[in-house]
Length: 560
Image (cartoon, rainbow, N blue to C red; front, side, top):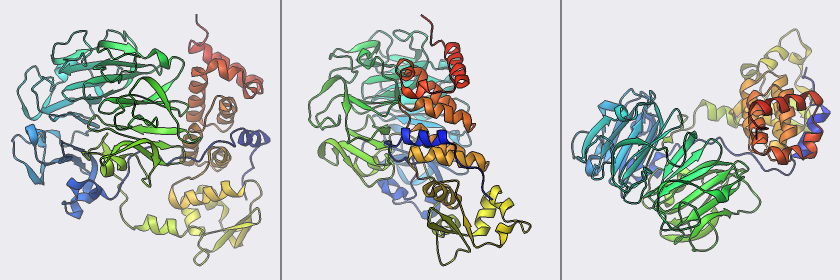
């Protein structure tokens, strides 16, 4: 009792993406051993077990803020410049609660070199405290802040993201606007002057009314990524970190014209260098390179974006922090690579590590060991029921059912399949013959696809290449597994290219994968000229092509 198999068009789609690489793990920082960060190695296990999010900062990685499962906020460490927000200057290795931030749903944390600290709550409110010698707290004074104080009265909008340089600050609003304040000796606040800015001020020069998607800061520079994929930079440019083709400081945002025609999807800053990732998985770097942090194979600074190559794999995530000269990235196969100043050694080209996420590089090799983003902790810790169930997959000793596919067997447990999947719950009812069988033959799907499906029921994870994930998407659609469909869409999105996006767009419509359909449409829109010249586009069903053209026209693709 299996659902209908994949259509011939799916098979042709599989072939069209056969050269793509393996999928990557979900892009989210996950780690169960928090003691990799030295400051957490002294905490009792029950405290570690309660941590949901964390941020490590300070000149020696000796200060930290963490948020528990109950949404309480704690601080620990040396408390330089009252950066722990506890209302005093006392240091402590015993976690102390930051009462003003508890139960507010902290969504983002950023820190400067003083250090000063900014946080954003679930309601879009921004708090600041710590070092304030350059007005980087944005509260209108230069007095040190010993506890969190809201600065939303100066912004007037919900904030979704904050970024700190050495002594300046940026905030990104829900409406895509940037506000900046603090030290401005190099123009890093972007207000057209070099005078310090005591309160948040909206940046409009250079970017006009364009909507901003993300922000990041080097020590004395600022960068912004627009929703169009364009990149702007301002502030200190002595090492070429703005990517403008010169070494001239810029007091207002300037667009990097050498990235014209390239859609940038991720942007991060190191101490004095910048990394950018295109929507096609190509990594670019520019700026300071005295430690090899650009990954170009040498130590020469670059004043314009330069491609970073690593075999034939595409990158899907990049990371850097203004606290160090380390760069790291994850490839589509889940490999975590690093380069730059790694524990005192200069690595000039990306090397492969054994880490499972980019965050681990900063814990192990950054000096100081600080986080580059808010770190989300995996709540499934240790050997638990889930681990035991995962280990039982394809276990010949305990299984009570075999699936026979392409002359290969997969050993499973009826009870687990019935619990996890409505399709099997119906199949194994007493009124159906399958309930009496100990071996079921499957002819509708390839072995790799069906095995991945069964393994997903045991582990909640999918480990397939993008071309195989298309077949799994077909199966998930037939079996009404919505969560699995979403996972398949994520995998396929990581393998989209100009050559196959039209086929994948059609497949997304066929399998009612709305997220994938929208992603394919936006990708095709960004590369419209090239996509419309591909063979895959010419083979689109007439109705699909007409609807695509209609949507493209509505999105303004044909305006002059």
